[in-house]
Amino acid sequence: MNSPHPDRPEPTPQKQALEILRQGLAQADGPVALACSFSVEDVAIIDLLSQLAPTTRVFAIDTGRLNEETYEAAESVSQRYNLAIDWYFPERAAVEQLERGKGLFSFRDSLANRRECCGIRKVEPLRRALAGLSGWITGLRREQSVTRDALQAIEVDQVNGGLLKINPLLDWIEAQLWDYAKTRRLPVNRLHQQGYPSIGCAPCTRAVQPGEPSRAGRWWWEDPEHKECGLHRR
Image (cartoon, rainbow, N blue to C red):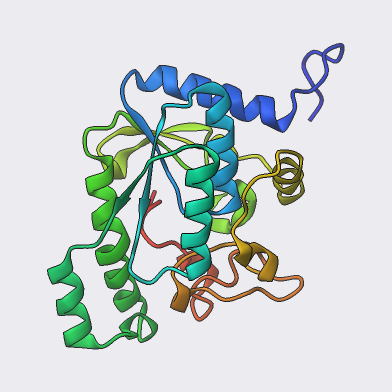
């Protein structure tokens, strides 16, 4: 698409993301937090926030089934940015009931079972993490999957009570993301170098093969249109 002002240079991805964050924080007009899974996208946003709004709260959900590499990335990010991360965990009783009743891998038996597991381990803790917020920030990108191609930079999250949802990297492509990570020397989850462009729970994520979409390794036994855990329902 041609620029409406051809005499002006196109803004860089970094400037675009900072402007989305700036507008989102202003529109929220209240507390805003970043939901962080310690992917390269989320670390890039933490780095951007360190330049714009360094006191922005960051929270993470420990599902109980994360990879060791993700915990290592969390520790590196916390140290690099002198950042206190607010961790949320699933309700103990709900996890115990699920595993006693259906075993440790029920999520592979059916889509309904997988959504039940995600609901317990991710969605319910997210609701607690979002309580009292006016908005939340995500690392979602349109390029990631067919379930995300309708993203807006700033949108109203009706699923979570009408909060503002701020997606500063929505138009970044993978090459731009990694160029930023290398230029800024970001602490990166080691799984990315092992073929994991998208990182979730250990038993639900595998490395992708050459030519596969970035989220092909998430719930690889399911159809592409189902590859969301419920955190980003529309």
